Length: 372
Image (cartoon, rainbow, N blue to C red; front, side):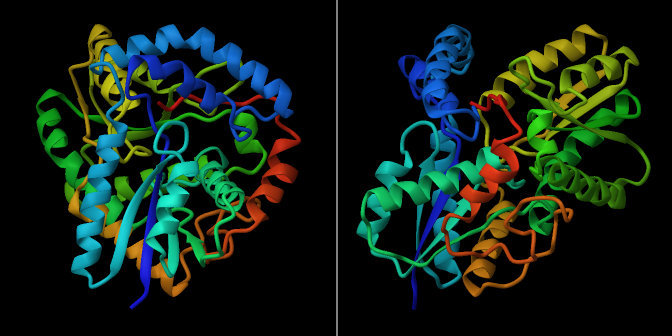
């Protein structure tokens, strides 16, 4: 039986208030976020992290002084490891954060010490973006090479925006709120995802298209269960910086819908565990905004967390990746993605780095987002 190491990728978050500024520096010093020469990126990352630190510390103070993303992700890792064992797989699940501990420079050694026969890299981002999945995989590959570790067959689950178990889990979690909201009128369901600069999408990033795929499948499942009793739209939150971002913004949609005195249900369609964008932005700031503008009801669908169907979705992707099964093609022909050619299992090399540079780095001077 093959010995499998599964590495769960997530963004990470500061665990204390003093960690906020270095976390922000790590975020903005990522070449996938600030796409410019290394020296200039370093200087700007220092400047931006200093300017944003005070505001960000206020956000984490509202969450008790630190991000819950690591404990939430560790709980998902434990649930996944138990479920893999029940499937008869000899697997250990590791957590690797991109911008705060545990980071790839440390986790690669932990995985090497485990001595697996195969490694499966599994991003907790259902929709592929060069700024999330792409950045994490590239960073992992660099850390493994830098550490001088021996070759281990390594494959990646690039994306899973339309996975049936993920879609069903979201629909299950949305049902109680839909039932509750019906007493307040015809609900508007907002499929809210983190934003991305328009220039990055225009350069070929498949993220927005895959968000649309996820939302379409969840809506289809909900209409199968409820019929035509709600309306829906897709929107994007957490814009930062002066560049044009993909639209419409969640804030603008909430204001417009609330002005009609309608019930609002928000589905965090790109988030699988709670962090500042769900616990503060959606649960507090946008709730206050909706009620201040006379929405008749406001509810946020829980994150997938350790929902059994979500864990089942991850297991399915791991198993199919190991078998090198083909996945459905979820990208248009002009998009860059591991699932582009119908098979998102691939041995890591320099493919992503070269493609990202040629297709995205050159046309984009500045594009960054905040997801912490």
